[in-house]
Length: 250
Length: 252
Image (cartoon, rainbow over all chains, first blue to last red):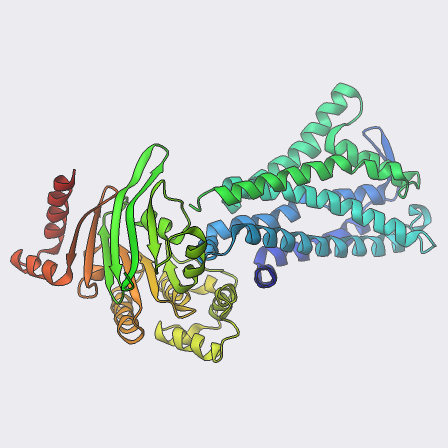
């Protein structure tokens, strides 16, 4: 397993898609904050500071989708998956090493994004974000990071499932864009029209924003909002695992 | 049996209700260069995929280097090298990094003289001068050479090559044919070479297997085929096409 992980990390560090996604995210986060407004934001029935809103916007899941498309589906496009399976490497171990490596790489990128975000945001908006360097600041920052990590990994699990279904970088990435747009734009618009407030995944994000707005990001109730994402993520990974074990490598 | 490197017994593969391989039985002995010849869609690649474990046979069995059961097969697969369906390489990596990935999977990275062995392989396939370049910058010819180099990492006993000369110019084909003869003679590597062009393996293969619509319709020694070719005024194209047709009708 150690050797499999070593190889996976070598592939990640050499991957062009990973490097581009990494640079884009680091440039875009501070750029978004510095060019954004400083008023409070009201949307879909929830109020929150623009800083929080801005970050959810900039956390664009497609960056992580691009990483998954390149590193998981890319093995099918390159044909390199054949080299691995043809060598008699245990498919289960290979799948686990792949998931661990892409999750670790994403957690690292996300950590840098959150770090960059808060450094720039604190400098610019300290007056009203509340995230100043006081006692609970680090805990709040940690809760914020964990929340985002759960969302990202949950989305990534769905993207891994796409790559196991499509076995193609292009189709996986189109699937990523499709589901991101569907959830964040179409579903949000339709539920607001029908119910007056947004529900579903985007609704959960809005609720979480409200927790930050009320300064209740460390309350127990806050964490309950993450349960649906965890369940969806686990279901997607389990489905991907069985597809990978059973399917022929075309 | 010890002399047998590969034996497939009535191997059958069904994809979406179509029999892509039909009861294929092939035996390849140690030291042979087996030329598997057949038109596109004859079932050569599917056969190689089943042997490498990329596709599961619908029926039949495979004995590879004496191993038959799944667990044993996984272990002996480290002793085989292959190129199936084109060169499978990491485009953002250099030749050395691609070799490193495979060497790690094989546990070969810590072998004494690992670096020297990789350098020798890259020299053998004619890539020593471009070893520092990324695969992205390679031509198709160079990618095929790199794929062959990867197949040779780990000192395999048996290699399977599927359309290795696709995208390689005449000079390159000549050089690679010499490489195949050299590794067969010097290192005793048994080779299965699948191609749709008889010319690719003519003069290299010691045994031929001709495939048509999922079946092996004929197996014959290189000498026998050479004699028959001579009788046909060395008209390769028409001889191969007619011969395969004739034998295909015979096995129906």
